[in-house]
Image (cartoon, rainbow, N blue to C red; front, side, top):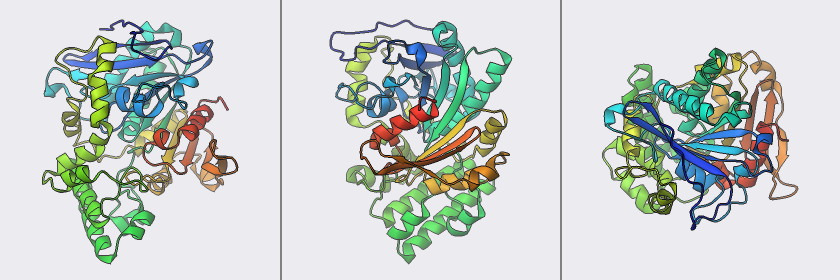
Length: 436
């Protein structure tokens, strides 16, 4: 099913070209997408970017669109740093059950990234078959958090589909932002300090006393043990316990940006919750589905779109999505990155300096474990500084690139880089998509 859509309503402030609809990716599984054509005299001169949110259960069409990179903000006012200025942007509520996407039953929810990738292949095949004008345009996948883990699996499946000719598109690369690629880091250096858990050592050492450090280390080792035993659902629960321990010993450090204060009431609801999976859903989904955004998406946006079934509430299945994927949450996908690089796919990793839940040091550590044949030369390269677009003469980021791999370290940004450093994120987009 590929539903057409009206392009404007009188209350709507956006004047650009857009379209949206549903694709039935499986029986009882319905995925929603929303496309903005690039703000240009000819959108065909600019790339197409698909944005994937994290969670799993975070809505790209909601959070990514109105809080980060879409043409309008949550007040429906134009965003100065919208990515639509430099690309056509496709938001997809993924996996099914996320945002406006929905399933007819909980049994139809995805269980792992392989299932997520299979569903996305159905959507992309339908999309490019209908939107034929995009078949030859360079197509990039950008992602954030757990969206990066899904993006890796989707990119590998898409590469194979393009080679077979089952999907007609010009796949140009994938960018993994603050991505949940290797939850345990997979390195002995991390194991010796934190049980292998990917947390920002430097930050925690500055916030924890010896007793707190001991508690966090003990909790982290429990995560490692569960993973080593192949007990991944238990590992997910233990990871939630570790996050609770960190919060309790740091007066509620904000996992998404260490320089901002976490909401006290939300923190208390998490810390007082004896259901650890519920605490996980708090940290990975609720910040993306806050009250004001929910009101926007279930109010004027729903009215504008005109295709959302009456029985579907935006974000209504988000927690079920996370729970259904809990057995996959702590599994690494570093091997998929190796496959992508070996296949010649352009891979970019980008990370915020102030992110705690997916810190830059942890990302560098799993990168060093790649089997990619260019790793040695890449590791020997020096970082190149990028000037902050908003502060002349100041460094806004560091990056280095070799062959088909690049790494961007974005300063003064946390987990949601476009929200924290919109101009720098936009410049990175242009560099990755070869516009600079």
